[in-house]
Length: 154
Image (cartoon, rainbow, N blue to C red; front, side, top):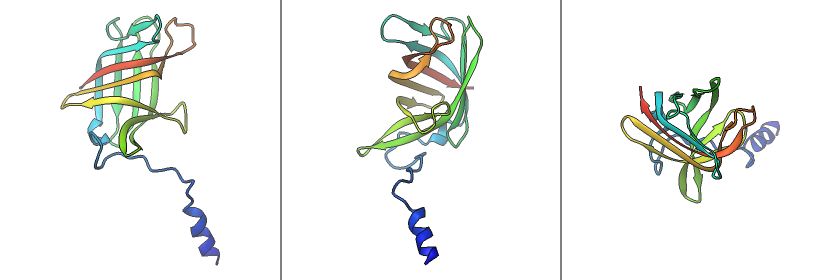
């Protein structure tokens, strides 16, 4: 009887869905991103008046991705100290279609979806309003914005 109760509670419908890394209907396997990438451009735009291309302004952006989809993103603007973000990439199934998603470590239990492309040595990612944050005026407070980045494999 105790075993039956344990099995009944361990298979709750409240359990989160597993993070999809590959399968039919996804554009590419998350493991295909494994490795190190350098940005050729990294644009942040608040949609009103502020826009920054970190690479175009002399900074660098790099990302290191594990085959599991876990990653570390380093943004090093030319005019201030570098900072690092991390998270996990996966495919979110919504109404029968897969969307590329990132669960950011700084926001547990929450994720954003992005437009992506992957060619042999190029990875692009773009996100709409509120899909990223950037400290445009370097006052220590990050503002919501959109992003567009292109990376090449190194």
